[in-house]
Image (cartoon, rainbow, N blue to C red; front, side, top):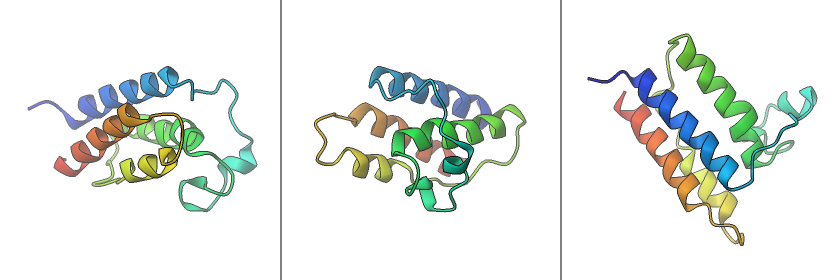
Length: 108
């Protein structure tokens, strides 16, 4: 059986590629204050794509790299669906990738 760490590492790389394809990838990180938000998904200081890039990808990559315990569920795909609702930009591939991550974490 393939390691969950290997699977998640691959999915995180694919998530980054999708953010780049949608032109949602940013070269400049947000301020330390914005990243220090205590709100879920940093909703008060970051956009959802910023949170994915600078919080989720960073934390998950660290957990994978050091084979630390991974969350057993994330349920991030619904947040992505909400982010793209009513937007002219389609985020179907991004939502699908987040669904894959959610499902792989649940399977363990």
